Image (cartoon, rainbow, N blue to C red; front, top):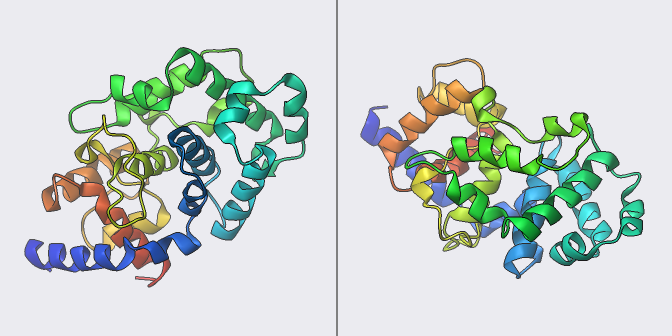
Amino acid sequence: MNKTELKDFLDAKVLQYNHPKFIESDPIQIPHQFSKKEDIEISAFLTATIAWGNRKSIINNANRLMTLLDFAPHDFVLNHKDTDLDKLSGFVHRTFNANDLTYFIQSLKNIYTHHKGLEPIFKENSSVNTMQPAIAAFKKVFFEIPHPQRTTKHVSDPLKGSAAKRINMFLRWMVRDNSTGVDFGIWKSIDPSQLSCPLDVHSGNVARKLKLLTRKQNDAKALAELDSSLRKLDPIDPVKYDFALFGLGVFEKF
């Protein structure tokens, strides 16, 4: 395919998958249970944090997470007592355990109490056409209070070579417009043009087959290459193609 044919093909796939039906089998359904901005972003951040492995398991465990937070994540984060954290014991999703979750709740309280929430941290550290430095800066803020060393692995750092798939996915959820009812568009201070595609095994393999990506590893360098390719197709909203790449890989076994 030439560039025009490739863009037409991917644009059609975006229309196919950037649709409310997408929510039915995707972890993004968890924050769709909420209407308050802070509840949406906290539930989305926690869900994205455990979004690796089997999708059904991710959704089940994210729903369990919301139950543990009394389906009021913002209120729980701000107003929990130490004894409230006891009920988090026993939670586990792959290598993310109750100790990690407890720290995440404590760190989020620090962020909403002393940094005015998640959005300002990402906005203050964003660059014109990338959020990767902002993700690295966010990790520093997230772990600025005393923390278990093991928990640091659950927040990626692009400046250390990570593609930061889960945080890039979280940012897509928060920033892209909600005109199709899938993403939320509740963070108005960040532009969709700054976003990067959540790069995982599915989107990476499809991108290579379509010659959007040549690097074999799914790392920060691969993400930069994919960013460049997708911005040539749509500089205003490059990450809409996440739906096309992911859908082709997961649902069509492209």
